[in-house]
Length: 241
Image (cartoon, rainbow, N blue to C red; front, side, top):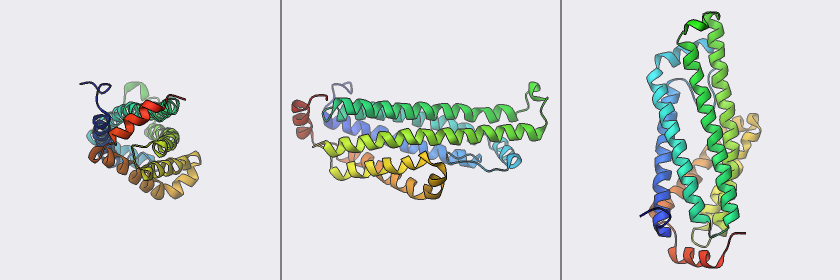
């Protein structure tokens, strides 16, 4: 049975399951990245220490990188599932939400590609002999900081996605309105990354709000799913607009 042919309840449960896989891979990937001295929210300003930590924890870096790519793939799948699930509310808004999410994941993926550059620089390729060690370390740190900046841009797209997603949930008749409010609030919180200094000051609060909202949505889909009768009713009377 394909996802397209599945019942609304089955689609919701599948979305919840893929959402859970996203959470696990993203969190574990971040833990491995932090062990290598890298975090999605920035790195140390000590170029020499960062380079040493990265090289001594290369395996952790590579595992974290692989898990991060898997988490992106999972979120792309979740995006497609949300589009199908919320299309009865508004086909056009569901499409806009999907586009915003995919833009965010594309930006995030480009950031992870940049994250590979420091390892290439620090592994002493012959053509890099024109640079002294301190210059190579500084270049590596620059790429890591660029990765963090790209991540901030991705979070802005994620915030816009969650805002539209929250609105769609609020307008739906088959999911609790409180979930829509939480998700929309998380979207507003992630928009703090439009001003990185503000986001840095509020990072703890932003992360907590985002994690609570998305975890609540994931758990509801996984455990409760949707009200299939109301989903079918809304699908029958609401067309794309």
